[in-house]
Structures are given as C-alpha cells and as structure tokens.
Image (cartoon, rainbow, N blue to C red; front, side, top):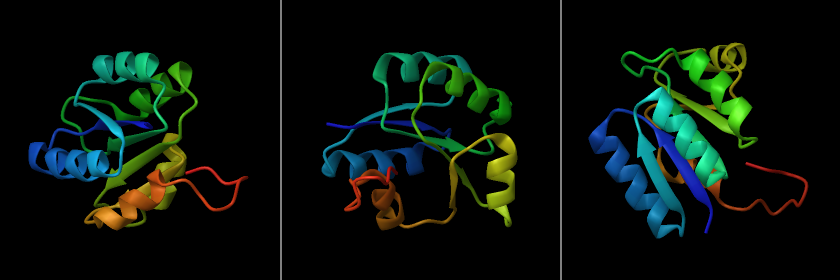
Length: 120
C-alpha cells in the first residue's frame, strides 16, 4: 500500500483527498506543520508528498528543502496561483497540481505508470 503525505491546512479538502486516496488503496497521513511533515516523511517513506503552497506560518520553500533531506519522494505543490509551474521549480518541487483539481488528476499521480521508467 503506497503511503501519501498530505501537507495542507484545509480540513474539508484534506478529508476529500484522504477518502479518494484510501479508496485507491493508499495509506494517507495529513499534517499542516513543518516539523510534523518532516517527521512523518522520515517515518513513512511516502510514494508522494502533496504540499499546499499557502500554509499559514510555514515557509514552504524551507519545508520542501527539509523534506528533500529526509526522503526522495516526489513533492507536488498544490496551488491556485497562475503560472505555478515556474513557482514549483523555483521552490524545488517536482511538479504542480493547480487548484481546483479533480480527484482523477490526483489519482494520475498516485497510480503506477504503464511505463516502467516513469515515476509519479
């Protein structure tokens, strides 16, 4: 069962994403703090980390840097900002999931690729 770490402060969105990921057979852990995100990532070795760009009181670039030191999982920045792909690269994330996004968009990141060389 792949582990997914969701770093977001939106409880409603977090519940919806968690439910969809659980139905997909994933283990999901959620947090909204830098320290807990790094701790969970270290313990879980997640397949994917989803990080909300606008976490109150969290420097997201520092969070991404600390996650990079802890694990090698892809980090996807979730944001409603336009031109987020440049922002994502500048912050060190592997990709961006533009809000609003569909559950299917999220699941494409989680499902195994048909191409063995590709990783989500």
